[in-house]
Length: 259
Image (cartoon, rainbow, N blue to C red; front, side):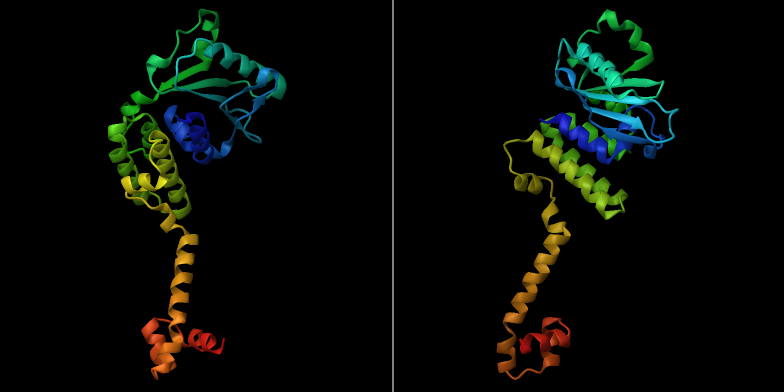
């Protein structure tokens, strides 16, 4: 499962979810920009960085890493990448935190004692399978929990999140993005299923809800209606009668007959 890519897109589109996870839900998300900077030496790349923008120099810098497997060299690479970032980008910010998001605690390696001076002030670790302690009314945290939900519970949990998104999100664009994220997570969790099969499982058909689809559908219906115009005229029906029958305005009927 391409968890790094999924979390990058989630945090990029909905940074409030990240701050919910780390226990700072009241953070002003407009303070930060989220990027995935490349560290040139040895081609290191951080999963993501929340860096304060503009005049918000008193806010901390957050380095974000997603770790879903045990890696004995993980902390070596993490801190190496962070210090190389400082060297190359020279951020003016005095405060920083390394945020590591694990799928479960068992995938964390033993913390190296050589980095113990960084542990308390800078490192923050979160375990997705333990986010049940977070209130269930958080849609954002629910989406993140879906990533680590067991396969046999994924379908029902995803449906719950879909219903919650449709009820709570009044902005149609944001609602659609959230539904797409939910669907994408389920697609990655069930690689043997097609997207159409996933949509059926979730009772979700995003294609048919799109404006492009609706416009294409309306255009197709219009063409079908206009095709039968000559037959209706041959039967002696007036333009007004045809318009009422086909639920079209009279100008549309006249223009079609002229063509």
